[in-house]
Image (cartoon, rainbow, N blue to C red; front, side, top):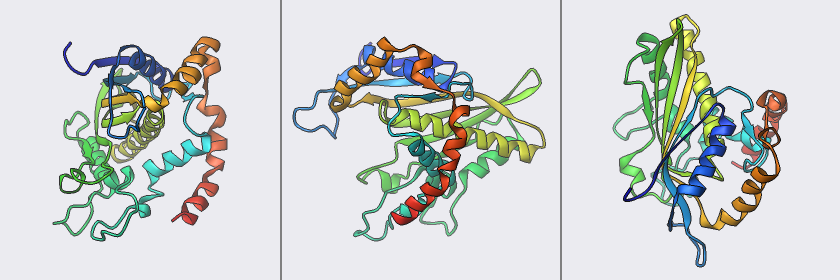
Length: 279
């Protein structure tokens, strides 16, 4: 193949699918520089990657080699699904405002267009379309703003979410496709996938409420145009992640979300206080 490799992996659960994607990327990805390299950094491992999680809620959902801790993971879920950091987004009309360019929650739930007075809740619109016609091909939400993101310093990595419902054994199941233009495979992708599966659950629950019947989860697909391990992180990855593959079995490398869910939920007040104090 000429050009950037296109790699495909799957797993029965989030933890296995993410792990398989990293191994495949390390073995078959190409070596390429990035705009964030410092002098002397090795080239990054990079590929276009398609990851399929067959059963997004199957245990074990948690991989032990995630960046940060369980409270950090809970905070990220709340950031994506509940918008706890939407107020950190900068005022685009104020050049001196150096806060964040965006949050995924804001782009998905309160997408703004200069010519419109009110923001657009794309996720609610998506749910409404699915409740009316589950097999529609138009149930999607996008994040990119051409008039802002082409020139801003840190444009959105997540580009779109697309959902569709298929009946299997008389059970409606909601599948979700997610596309990233750029995805840090080792330091971010697990948290991205985990949080977006939580969003997939919320979408299924909302469609169930609107349609008056239970909608369960189907598979989750994660497409990253650039799925990469930064060269600066390769030594750590080889020592920590690949070392764990050699020294521990899969059960030793993962955890059941059910076993730590209560602890993660208990961190919510602390997370909200921290976010408020850092505003």
